[in-house]
Structure formats: structure tokens, C-alpha cells
Image 1 (cartoon, rainbow, N blue to C red):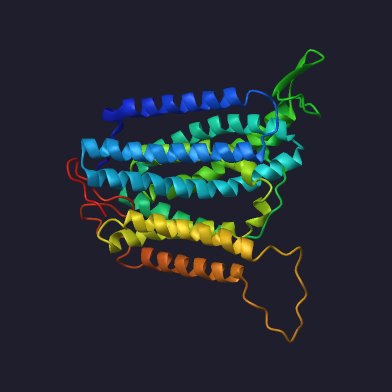
Image 2 (cartoon, one colour):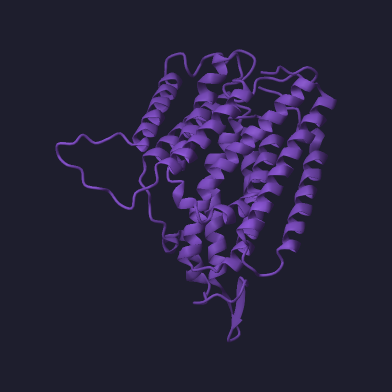
Length: 384
């Protein structure tokens, strides 16, 4: 069982202080966007830069805090783990934006109301993720849970890479059907209001249905993303803070990328490779490197995979439709096919290792853990 640098019983005040910081940031954001107006790309880009700068500043503050209380090596480790978790979560959140764009388009939500919906969506996302992280922090005390997390990420990566694009129909959502069954819903929007009284009867507006649908979607995404960050670090405080900063910047990034999301058609393959890599790290690579795969190398690999998937999307634009191929002409291997092959190779390697006779039991009796972070002494932690 590994030790954490921030046990909740001793550092509850740190969680409380960070929550207070987030409350101040959200209040500032809400005050700035109190008017119902469309967010320009320039303003969204500025806010995206601000949120990223705040995440980098927090990483530096975390480095200084841990260095002062433990050692510079431990501070560097925690700072890199935060950045890696932030990059993983931010990358996976981009996949979330595709759903946001489809839902807003489905319900014809005007641009001036979208920020309000996303603002309250962020509040709900942070609450649900805090619950998921608390549960995950309890489960990872058992080494075999990390193996299950790793295999789950491998499965998720395979599914993400292999499944075809699906048409999302919010009308088929059980949450939407439940709301429409028990509550009267207006046919049109009433400004930015979620509730409205019509003929003395309380109605919900389509804007509330949009919010609830986005919340349930984010919960499903969190099931994948939270275990992925636990594959990078076993510090619940680092998992929580990296998730929060990624979610905080999600709204502004959405308005920056909303017009270009369709161009990133190969991003899901990059995200699939990232999930496979993190799963492989949890069930194999950490052991291969004596208990912990170098966090700097993890950050570099994840960043390169995401950058490569975006670059390939721009270099090989998505065609409007499939072109007929002559029967005598061999079909060219597209970048999609290559990436799917990479995913299958990584998935096969991780599954074969995890299910091998010595895979699951390897080093269970040693100090450290399967996947994640090895034991970090409170004075001089080991730095990869």
C-alpha cells in the first residue's frame, strides 16, 4: 500500500483552500459573463490562455509547497504529475466538446445562452468528479484495483478507436425522457431561464434539459478520465486539482474550437492511444521501470500523441464522402488504419501481459504497487 503526501486527515485545509480558490475563480468568471451575449473567439482564446496560465501557476506553487515540506525531488515529481494529469484530462475533455456542439445544435441553443449552460455544467462536473475521485482514492489502496483500472482503460481505448461515429439523439436519453414524463416542458426557450411559470403551472425549459443531458454525458466521460489520471498519479489531491483545472478551462476552449471540431477527426484515435498507453503503464510499464514509469517520459509521450493526432487531422482532412475504389486498385492504408493498428498492438500486449501466469501476481508481495505511484517516503521520496 502506497503512502500519499497529502493524506486528507492532515491536509483537509489544503482541499478547503483549493475549493475556496475555485469558488473565487468561478465567481469572477460569472461576474465577467453576467450579460447574455455571444462569446467572441478572441475573448474565448484570452480566457483559455488565462485558465492555462493559472494551471501552470498552480503547478509551480505545488512544486514549491512540496519542495519546502519534503524535498525538491518530491516537488518536481508532484509538479510533473499535475501537468501530466492536466494534459490527459484536457485532451479527453476535447472529445466531450463534440457532444456539446451536437447537443447545442440539436436544441438550437443560441450562442448567448451556451456559456450559462456550460457554467452550471462545470459546477455539476466538479461535484461528480470529486465523488468519483474520493471513491477511486479508496479503491486504489488495493493493488488489484489498479490492474482492473488498467484493463478498463485498454478496453475503452479499443472501443474508442474501433467504433464508428454515432449520431447522438438527446431525445433517446433516459434522463430527457424521465424529465418529459414527470414535468411539463415548454416548446421554446425562455431566455436563459431553466424554469418558467405558464398558466400558473411550473414548467422546465429546453435549456434545463440541455444542462441535464450534458451533466449525464460528463459523468460517462468521467468514468474513463478519472481512472486515466489515477494511472498517472496516486495522489488524490493531484487528481482532483488537475481535473478541476481542466474542467474550468473547458468552456472557453469550447468556444475557441467549436467551429473547428469537425476538422479534428483523428483526435479520437490519439485519445485511444493515450488510454492504451496509460493502461499499459498501470499494468506493465511501472513494474518494468522498478515501480514507476518516468513521469517526464509519460508527459512527453502523451503530448506527442495528442499533437500528432491533431496534426494528422489537419494534414489529411476528412473527405465529404467515401470515394469509389476501382476493383483492380489496392486500397491505400489511411492514417486511421495505421492508428487502429497501433491501438490493437498496444491492447494485445497489455492484455497478454496482464493475463499471463505471472502477470497479475508479479511483485504483489513487494513494496510499491501495480501501476500508479510507488511508495514515497515522507522525507526523501524517490524521484523517477
